Length: 223
Image 1 (cartoon, rainbow, N blue to C red):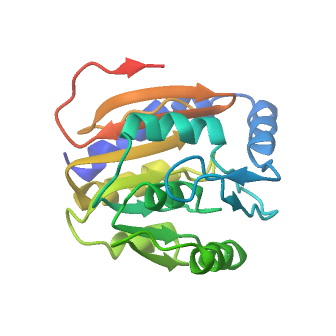
Image 2: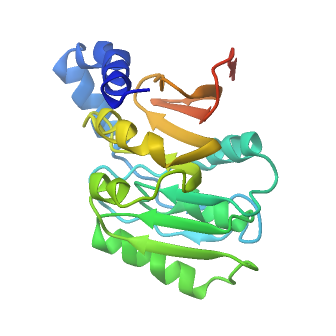
């Protein structure tokens, strides 16, 4: 599907969110910036490993319960998968993937302190057999522009809310998805991604989370 159509659909899906009163949007954005003081890896080789949560605007780690739901959807193993955690933050999503057998995870986090925290943790963890990773500190658009076509089996997309990141990133990201690749998206509102099938979706407080797959659309399961 052409990039301009993908962008238009994402913008239309979020239009009613932008139409809300500014005070309500600001209140929700403020709540979304509140990071929990302590989170942990919930499964796999590194289960129960604590993760550092730095105090930074826009940092919104995926809650343990949401991550547990997501990785139940993805299945018990991600053996051999190539993954991208584009707005890595604490690195929780990419670390969960490595913990469960992913072959390679690219963590991209532009904030130096957060990227260094991910690197420090990775150096002290037991490396899963055959696993590899990369940590970069690029702007998300530059990171996606550097990716090879069809090079990703799994993408975690958890951008700061109310900044239009999905409309900017998704058109460029689509060619990077391998056949049957899965895309996880967190957003402040429900979203649709033209060309991808919605597998599952849920909501936790103000966070709407979705799992898509790179194949023809069929009816989705909610909950």
